[in-house]
Amino acid sequence: MHKTNEKKESEAKHGALTGDNHAALWSGRFSEGPDAAAVAFETSIHVDERMAIDDIHGSIAHASMLGEQKIISKSESREIVNGLKSIEADLKSGALQIDSSAEDIHSFIEAVLTDRIGEPGKKLHTGRSRNDQIALDERLYLRRTVPRLQNEILALIQTLCKIASRHTASLLAGYTHMQRAQPGTLAQHLLAWSAMLVRDWERLEDALSRIQKSPLGSGALQGSTLPLDRESVAKKLGFSGATENSIDSVSDRDYCIEFTSCCALLQSHLSRMCEEIVLWSTAEFSFVSLSERWSTGSSIMPQKKNPDFAELIRGRTGKVYGDLISLLTMVKGLPLAYNRDLQEDKEPLFDALDTVEANVQVFGAMISCATWNVEKMAASCTGGYANATDLAEYLVRKGLAFRTAHGVAARAVRMALDAGLSGIEELCIEEFKQCSDLIEDDIYELLKPLSCVENRRTAGSPSSASAEIQIKALSEFCASSKKRI
Picture 1 (cartoon, rainbow, N blue to C red):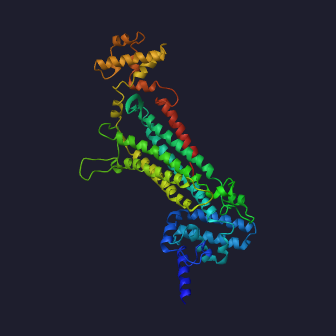
Picture 2: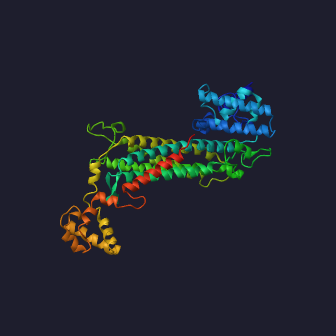
Picture 3: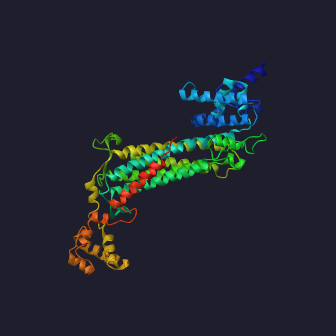
């Protein structure tokens, strides 16, 4: 009697891993169930449940192949496929809830399938390991969700282009070393942000190309003695082919690291943009005023309107960097092939995705209703000698060597500084002549901030014509790159 009770207790512990009375997938070798604390420590259902649909799609392709290869009967294959489709439908409708006490999403789906169709459900795992199964699910999940993030990036680029198109003539000083450098426009600055986002989109597109291979059929690490058709499964799932090496297939997490690296770089760009928004919204700059819908107040200072959302995006950069470091550290020195350490890949992977996706959306909403103070921005282009390079290039066009012209412009700056002037344009023509006889009266028109901008006609420059070209190119890029999930 005592032994019978022990057996029942052991079976109960095994069943706890799947959330019902089914034993854990690996329980056959064990005569004793795991401790409850051990079960709680090693379960991953709370993290990997978001891949339920991906797991089902992978299982449908696998079951279909098993039937085609006559590893199981055609009728069993159909039963499994129909059972999996019913689970998918019930999950989507809410008729079926994921059991949080299950060990992982694979165990949960297989247990529900067996409950619904009986013995054929136990054949689903034929020729498959959770090692190649999870590698497949992650690839399917990323292939499904990366385009969604790319679309969010495109939407932000379009928002920035829309604002830029209204401000091609809105002057704004460009800065280097946080010192006024040269006259520019708000459009040019927003288009610089857009250029960073284009690269982020392209990096994600490039990362997708390395996700597009199916690891299923690699088994635990050394493939299978069964006549699995890996290429058929890959084709059914829309992959470009099957992975080449079975050991690498189950131990590779490069695709997770590469994607998270893309997220980290995207997040760094958002952080830089937010830093400028925070800076520009100060009373000292006053270039931009954020909508009250995207600002907060102070609990003690009634007058405050704080750029909290920009600060939060900037602050969450550390999370995404941490996600990347977690993944890199996880695989550092990890022997081939599969190790349970790899279970820890999903939390940082999903966190990086969730964080950057939310940040892109919030930044777009915040910037779309911001108000730009064109007078204040234009004032940043007057004084401060931001047009000194234009004087040097004026002299170059008159035949002077640039290094000599640079010296002449520097002499004019020094002369203006010593006279207490706010800019070289305040020098009289006689003072300019003391610097160089090549300077004529036409210099005054050329030194006006808008002239400085419009005379810069090189590709990618801030002139209104160049800005229009950039906006058109970005709009075409967004139109041709739009993805659907």
